[in-house]
Amino acid sequence: MSKIGKLPIEVPSAVTVNVAADSVSVKGPKGERVLPVRSEIKLSLDGTTLTVDTTEDSRFAQAMRGTMRSLLNNAITGVTEGYTKKLEVNGVGFEVDIKGKTLILKLGFNLPKKFVVPDTVTVECPTLTNITISGIDNQQVGQVAAEIRKLRKPEPYKGKGIKYEDEVIKRKAGKAFGSGG
Image 1: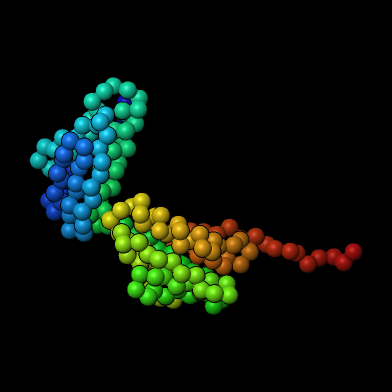
Image 2 (image 1 turned 135 degrees about the horizontal axis):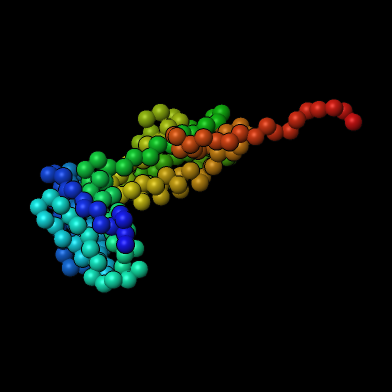
């Protein structure tokens, strides 16, 4: 039995949820998300409470029940509050800038790296070393943040590279100068 799937979802007053046979749409102040619904899942909306149930009693159906409940909860949170990831760029001469839908990153290579931002997220650069990624889809925001971070991962000796704001880089000592032999 799914422990997460059996929990009801409280729908805020600013959000409208439309349940169809094979999809559910969640519309709020920040935007709209449409999620597909598998045949094993049955959704019911009673006033402001959304419940997820299964149409068959199998282990796979119970797993999909918990997954669908989490996806719906994330969609409701996304259209009301949105999701944000913050990245920091560390290194001498490393900086970022945004021009239109293109993020230009100077990361110590001979040419700047260019990253085209998808339409599903918004990217801002409040300072030369900070990147803020926001949107209504948690998966999309995390995917764009991971792709930007992948352009220059932080290295363990000096900590140079792109890291998440709350990420802690394990530092290494490097070569030790010691006894002459």
